[in-house]
Each structure stands twice: as C-alpha cells, then as structure tokens.
Length: 133
Image 1 (cartoon, one colour):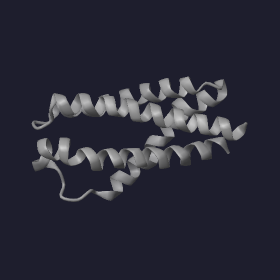
Image 2: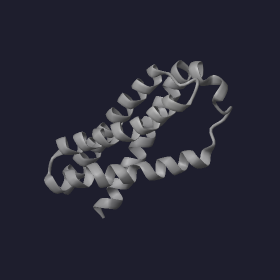
Image 3: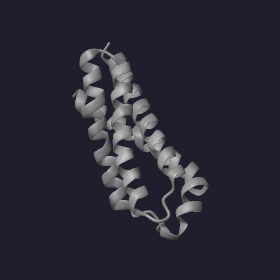
C-alpha cells in the first residue's frame, strides 16, 4: 500500500513541478537556445513514459528508505542525489554530443533535477509519515 501511495503521490507532484518548470523556463531557456532542434509540439508518448518511470526510482531510492528509517532528511538527500545523477547523465551526454547544447542549460538542468527530485521525495515521505501517524 505504501508503495502505491508513494508512487501516485510522487507521480502527481513531480509531473506538476516539472510541467510548471517547462512551461515557465521553456521559452526563456530552451527555445531561445535549442529552437531549431525542438519539435513544434511535444511528442506525448515518450513524455508519458518518462513521467510513469521516473517516480518509480524516486520511490525506490529515496521515499521507501526514508519511510523505513523515519527520516524526511534521508528522502531529501537520496532524492536530490538520484535527481543529480539522472539529470547529469542526460545533460552531460547532450552537452558532449549536441551542437546547440550549452553549459548554461547543462548546469541549470542538473541543479533543477536535484532540487525537484529531492523536494518531491521529501514532501511525499513527510506526507506519508504524517498519514501513517
């Protein structure tokens, strides 16, 4: 039951945070630099796949260990570490292989991934701990 609740909560919260980030920063950061390689509209199937898969890792690596230990700080740390590694993998690969990719986008996205993943993990863990009593 905790796994399912943690998954649904992290899916909804991470998707909301990430979609807000992309809608806010899309024109400011990405479109300006990457405009000629961006699709005119989002390819929805891979987006849905990402939002379905990513919370699995947050639950496994950050939220469930935090629930077992009773530590929201552990969820924050593990979530941030996972987000840092996941986003760094993507960003550094793009920076190494794509002509338009910039150091600015790389750094901003890695920091964003760590912060968003850590905060989502901590909020979900705290909510589940409070719900369990």
